[in-house]
Image (cartoon, rainbow, N blue to C red; front, top):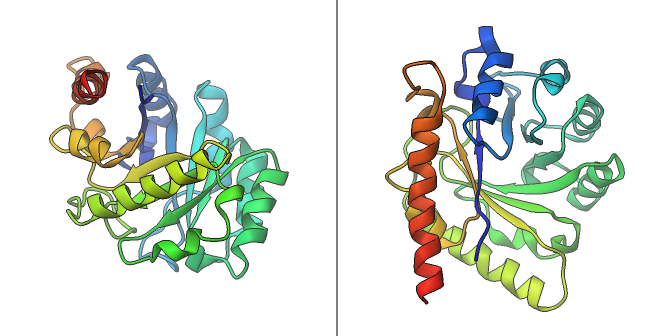
Length: 236
């Protein structure tokens, strides 16, 4: 049965209380903390840098999943590796030499990921599958939180799942299939059925806090939707 992971994106968190927010996510059962890095160059927004990652690291035992929406990426990837990231994902359009970038991330002790925007062709995966620990399919165009999921991303997720399964069948390493953008309670089941196993959710989680400021309610709702997918897998 597929092991599902939920990675709340702190892009939608209260930045004035970021350490507390991450602690509440961990208490609510999050599997990873997703860290969206935007540079106002590759995407039209500006968020956080390695210093925030380093400051956050002591506040959680969860892996920090860094998504670099920046160009260039190599120097920044090394800085985030040193700041405590566990996974670093880059966009192929942002690197002049993708193979080298992925190798650099791994050389600095992190798992490496490649992110595909809605219009990014899957051919970028052709020669780097053996360098990947994660493939991130964007459900929205990157740059802003709170966007609606683009429906045709489901077909892309399914196509990436086929590539991962073929890679594994030929003796390749495990690769996570993560989806970021527009993930919420009402569609996480369909996204899982398309083949995703790791789910980034921002406004869906931080926009639905419990009465005490925790996130058990919405995390539980997301888990229940994923549990239904798991039951279907067992029945099959």
